[in-house]
Image (tube, rainbow, N blue to C red; front, side):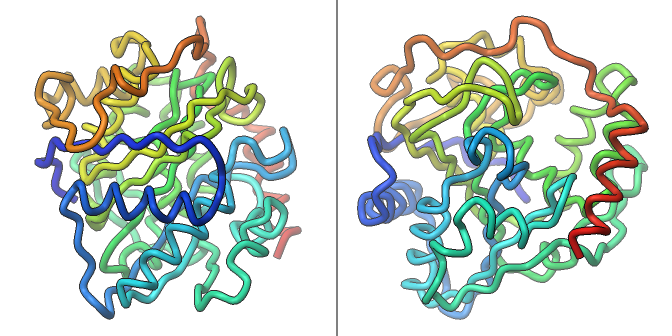
Length: 308
């Protein structure tokens, strides 16, 4: 994935109506000059952290996933949807949160990220990336805009962590979460080994106050897109009216001087951040440790085995 483009699309969207959402997807893709060749193998990567707790608020909404899938099918692409929840399976979470029902009748395959391909990051660390990710031509990142109790916010860059297979994710949390700066560095390193594509962020109803699961609904009324997830994160932090330096992931991007890590670099072909700015979005005032407790790691592994 190349991180050069600094255009960010921001489109107001007040409800989860599939026709309206598909129109906004069209608007964002056209505004960003994003084109899809017929026959392209497209993998949609929503946030499927948990459908059980908080009535699925933490997940990308089914209507968004279906609208994006329809748009790519209209371009002549073949479409699959997958993720690697740390606890449970993607197919199980999709069924529980309504994505399976929303995709009914569409020629879209739903996949669990189970088979891994070892990939070495710039730091020298080897991670297991889902083979389904390596097999796609375009990786379409579909994060939920939300607060995060460990990383301040969960936006575009964080959602790519779902490309790492299954139990390896909480293991990486446990192994590197206690080392200063190591975990967010891993998240940013991961971008370089993933396929390019586009991020379309679900912020029609965001989640604030806490996260990544137990937050409260926040009516942000926004669908946002970008080819560069770093630029998109920078823009969304501005939309939310939050200090970017409070985000460990943003600080890591800025430390590396990555394209899109400062607001002045960005251009906006549609709305500007101040035109869709939020009032009252609450981010955590104190962050919890990134590392998972070993017992939580064991519990997640058992749940994945039982779900098969």
